[in-house]
View 1 (cartoon, rainbow, N blue to C red):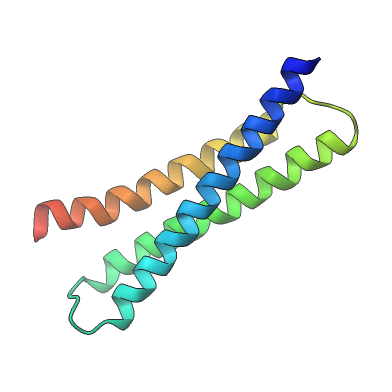
View 2 (view 1 turned 180 degrees about the horizontal axis):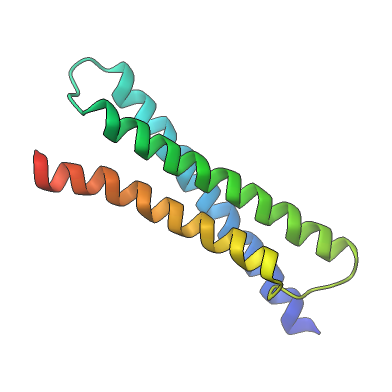
Amino acid sequence: MPHRKDACAQSIGICKLFITLASASIAFIINMIIDPAVVIPTAVKFLATLSMGGSVFAGIASLMHITYRISQGVYDIHADAYRHCASAQIILFAVGVLILGGWALFFV
């Protein structure tokens, strides 16, 4: 049982980390939208912001799910709903980074 509690704690920590990174990325993108010196297509800004926002939403949903499970005394992080939310959080973050990084790498 102690290893399941440790796994839950690490899972929550990783989830919080990705929420923080996605939130910081949204702030970075908003700064690029406000700054007139930065020339980035509107589609890139919109898609990257949408992807990072989806990552934050999925992260909050996964945190809510794991917190509910812990409050019931269940320390299983292999539940399907949690895995899908956590996977969506990471994938959406990676897509947002690829949108920004791919645009900067290939079109600048």
